[in-house]
Length: 166
Image 1 (cartoon, one colour):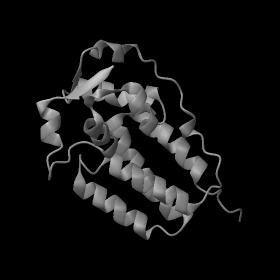
Image 2: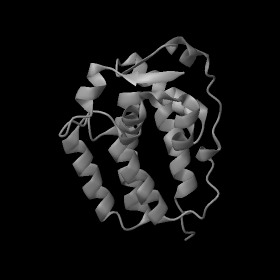
Image 3: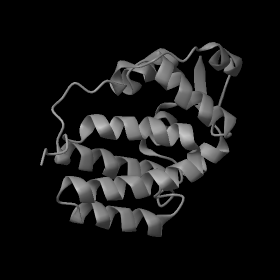
Image 4: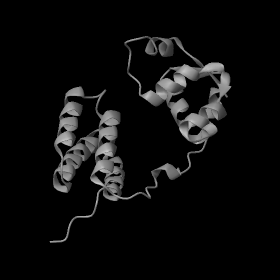
């Protein structure tokens, strides 16, 4: 599967334009008709993830290819990247929430994203971190559905240190 940019993609890649995320823009930059999904897979942790991103860009009109229908045959499989084996910490949780804020809110509602960023900067303990996370999850549930919010809540619970026993 060799993908090429459309005029819409070239417009997106012009200086000062930023409607897509970093991963999508990276794939657009590489889509020159000479690279395959296998080449993109190295950047995205596997061909399946590259296929998911490419499929989205094709559907949105940023990419085209000689065999676009081949994207439809890529099966999504669970990725080990969602497994967290590290030590829970406030710092890890904060970084996850900052990243989540960037991915979920910056383009949709910049003012809300800035409020969440400020709340995360001020969150110094478990309770304030949880309060910010709950507010973000409420917005995510509205925008992306309850199932997505629940999946993120499970991830946060793995990252956040256990509540101290009183």
